[in-house]
Image (tube, rainbow, N blue to C red; front, side, top):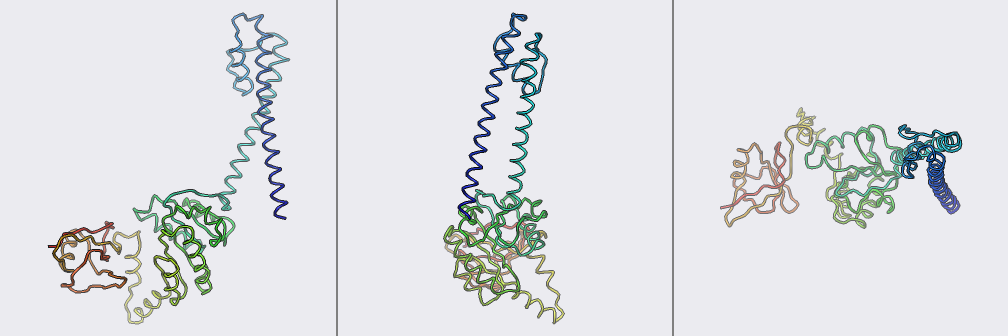
Length: 355
């Protein structure tokens, strides 16, 4: 069945190509006919008429522009040349407009149904469809990050047939296909992408984690330099995700459990977490690499005081994969530490000289 479909599609393309060649040939032939005919009929009554003028008249007439700078004065020029040229020109113009309209409709349909390929560089690929509202919120967060607001966004999933209008309005490009299919990954431009956000296909089904493990393997085979953030359903699968190539694995149920425990004690801190994590609020928590030069040392308190003068709050650090929140005033920092800071500026790095 697939071979038959492919054969019929090839035949259709060949017929279309031949038809377009015939139209081009017809236009060229009729342009020549009109130009020569106009010159032969009108030059006896208009000695100043040249063949170049006749070519110009033929183009103007067939495109229905009709400037009026040249016009037929003889009966033969009017009825044997001008009248057929106007009829033929109108038909060709209508055909050309129909071809253009059909092409635009087909391209728009391909775009909405995820049939196109994209060749962007350093774009962000969103894999799986966790729900329209969740995706809109995620895209809004990404657009509010000044480091990411100019990146193209591509959604790759086989869970929907057509991209929702709300996502199309946000200029999200859609590729329909399985994220473990190499052809679909190539159409999404994974080889040149910079970041991937891999959503759980279902927040209630742990089989989503098994599927995403396969996706991680497929992604690594195409581009092993990707920064991949994966959402997992079960906390037990986080280590597997990291071993399979994920840069970060987020399990939403863990945070939910902690927030519920805090709420039991009367501590309503969910809004605080939301504000610190959101790009839409003035202050956010960021992990910023520390570049420390010099032969001396620098303590946590020294750097905290220095950063505070620039309206940046130092709250902790990560070293060797272990996090340390508020480690103490005398804790000595080291080059390469990832600093946890709260700021509005979102610095790329923090450089200091120890001494």
